[in-house]
Length: 374
Image (tube, rainbow, N blue to C red):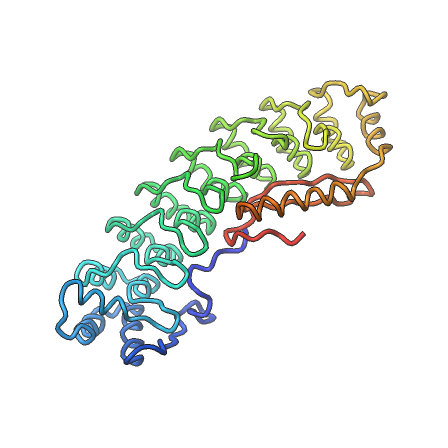
């Protein structure tokens, strides 16, 4: 799986994933505040109530909520976040229902109590916050929704819960949907199915690209995800020049290549450089792929010997403009990312058994929105 988005600042937690308990330097009574926060994390409702009485000092209603909402640690993590991280439903209930703290209180990285609960895989708290009005579409400072985060983490039950409570399956984050994230993770075919069952739109492409979920699943070499998307009605030929079949030829997945051919993929489509899938397969030296594509590919006039060996021999005899194509691939990936902060990258040309292999593949990289260094 791709690297995960930190749900709270790394400095807020120690090596064991527990709060680092750094006091707020701007607090009038940091010792009291830290004890209060620790009680919330530990789920000590009695101490939390005592802390509320002490911090409130006669305040009521909105004023009390403001006072307790201002209790923060040195990283600016609040009481409700701490209670969510600690997994205490009674403390969360007290803070939300009695004190009236904001259920969508925002932490230093845009994290809410809901996303803190998701990070702990606490379905009970996730359900509680959703039932009390937590915003399922609220973006953190990195631009990710709770659904994107849960999908990227592989939390199937929480993805189902978010969707059942009204989370938008097609919400965009950095130009991609949760379905793009799940397809890229490859092994998360269960989440792909859950999203499709909740009517996630498989026709949506990453912003600024032609990369649908099927293209991304193909690039990730996930046969299960590819099959699920095809069963859901995904266009086997995609929507752009770099079709799923072309991507399969680039990525070197025999099973996916067979699957797409059986699903009726057009083997005569050409990529951005004018190459058909069979030429790409031949260029990579993948004889088995050439054999699979041969019966469904129309004869190419420039290939004199129209046979499996003839196609492979013809491709090997043609000089490759490797440097030009490599520069183009890099430029395309960086430009798309720069313009839309898309979760895109390009796998560049490599050498496979002394043959040039075109591997320009669009892929959802990770929920940090970072492009692989090319």
